[in-house]
Length: 50
View (cartoon, rainbow, N blue to C red):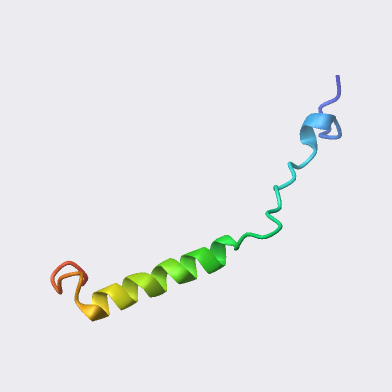
């Protein structure tokens, strides 16, 4: 048994690619813009958002 990290358990896991999805960066951007618009419209009260 080797402990040098060259075994199969040391192989990096591949991330599953979503062919027609949006990335997490774009999802976070969209959620942030929606929250900004909702707070500007007045759905979220002024005291709730600092």
